Picture 1 (cartoon, one colour):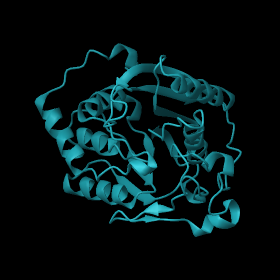
Picture 2: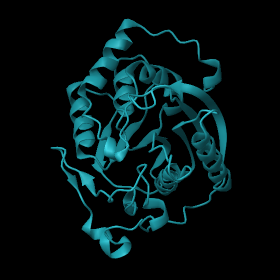
Picture 3: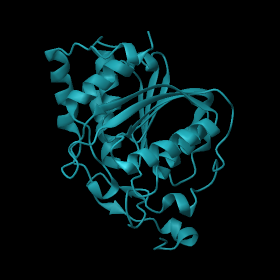
Length: 279
């Protein structure tokens, strides 16, 4: 049954808590400069139980995975608690996340194939990966400074990388009392509809985060289906300047990637397009 609206009365066992602890314990330290804000372990269990049927026998793309939800889905499936995806692929600009997920899947003998690679959504998507996935899972930067354009940037790359009839899950903030979340949600939903998606499910107030300045802010889960074969206008191209400014919530230089030791590398390859400071 793929109706998350009927699944809110969940039973969480001690085994599930222990497994989630393994995931959260192994996560690298969040780099808040680039909007890495991690979900609480209990909310990750809830998300896994609510979403796993949508991932059943799917080739799933995680476009960024600081939370470690790919580890949750893979671990719970391996333990026989949830259904089994066909494959899990994680693309993230943070080498720490990529290497951690690879090592974790090996340490816990995942029965689900896991592939990882360093990738920055500013860059063109790899041609050999385009149209290879039938489900995407994203928890992108909040887009508090650009009315949801950060999430829309992530959706453009999901459109590149997923099949034209793929489905997906977005985890994004929404609180009707917080104006910027309402503005962002409005623009994101408008983009989805204009890009050939329908919103199958939406549950608000689901997840909380390690976010000291806004501990009460929660996110919503949207499940979407792609029903029209519209293509991203940025396929094969760098993201334009308007998308990259404020991508991570404020004015800062564009990162190329984060190395395994935590070193943040700049992006000289972008200078000829954007300039070192372009906002």
